[in-house]
Image 1 (tube, rainbow, N blue to C red):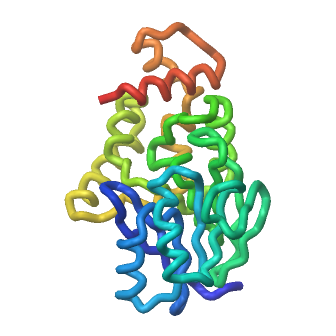
Image 2: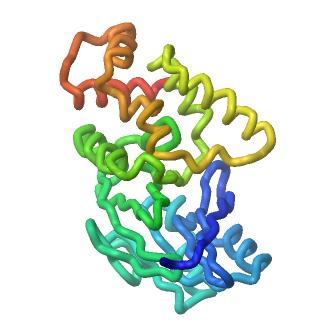
Length: 255
């Protein structure tokens, strides 16, 4: 078994997290959209960047790679095939060997077609596919693809810790409460996570078990969600994919 490692969120832009896995003096960064905050953190902690894991091609997830590669030319960059700056292209079922352990690569299209997630030692780094109480917008993929990707992640062990790339939790919970208002887990999450944000703390990581219990996009087929969709003016629909698509469209316009 590998030695234990820690995971630290480094803030970027307004609501991004660059997740840093660290073991001893070695570090792995997930989705460094900008280089400066990560470089400052690594310097302050006297860490050597071993590798970078990229989930997809959006600039707020990979925009810092070129600058980081100049500062740490020996750091390997893992990510989707065909993406600029990737030195080690990976895809579904590939394994990435790190000093912290082995990361299994999962293809999770939906938000983008090239989206990947990394599962390492009970920790899931899922970019913009699964959020705390939410999921990413469908910029390139179909509702069926996103639903299948979410189900793939939900099939991981329930104790798996979930590390999305954005601090979207409170806005996601507001929508979740509109879609699933009688769910007691959501009330608990809103109270707890509001207090965390008031203290300037991250609401993440979540867990697979918590997301299954309260994320409306993992519950799009349950009667309570379907009832809320009907109240939005929809028609009765027993097709889970159709319900998911309507739920995602509702979230797109939710304020």
